[in-house]
Image (cartoon, rainbow, N blue to C red):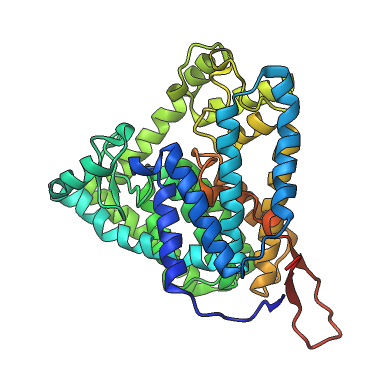
Length: 427
């Protein structure tokens, strides 16, 4: 199947709805979506839709992917024991992610972009209400109590927006449709990456929507990803005065906003306090004094590297959870994956993310310098360092996109006027 990278296909409203549904599932808020039974249902639903859209053709690559997963899992299982239920849960998620990618194929990023940027736009008026008239959300308490899982009780939920009340600066951060601001910021990193590449790093109205949504998350990890992407954009287009004017206008808006509300300063101080607490978090995590919910993102790094030095093959899902209970449970998805699957597993994931960025650049016919390409790759990797996006279907699809689709990316032939093609193999 040959697909010109410049071809534009009309988006299916059914696939937009299904992408929205999976994003809501990924949000982790709805308790009915967190059960083992629903995971199985979601897998079968995704398989059926994928088979329909692919004329009931099953690519044998899924068996190779599961086989690699099994091979990576065998050594830690032998050394540390095996929790069959957790391994089976991961296998279900990989199968689900594979067929999810097969539904959207090379248009996965386009559908993700369309849905997330719309949800980001929707979040902005709700966020304004959140900081000006929070009691407005009381009318949604019945639906919140009905849908939210136990750990989210006390929040207020509108499906497309969550009012998160459990932060040090409660009610001043934008969680969007996700369970917390840092998770929303991570998804915005993916979206802004695609938006910038698609537009050749020029700023459009949608770019500013995403930037404003980014700012309202007050997520340290999200800001790091944002700075990396803005750096890539500035390096790629050095003379776009409109872009600089827009960024300056945003900074001035932040300054005026802070003078009137103090929200920016309040969240900045919160971030400073979190950084000051890191030595305590690291000490507690490395000495075994912390509980699962008390390991910070930075402490997850320290604990993770110590663990990998002891076991480069990873720990998988040990049978004796009380002995290995802190491993793989920090709010740092990248290090959780590193700890679970070791050097081999994380190498597969990093290669996949590198190839995903290469694919996006090729797909939208964008030529960039090596440093810009490296920054885009780094931003994608960093999006998984500040939250727990390591078990959700779309997150796994993003992580392993290349291995699940394996698009061949050909270099341009400068002597030919023909556009190169993306070839999805084995169809």
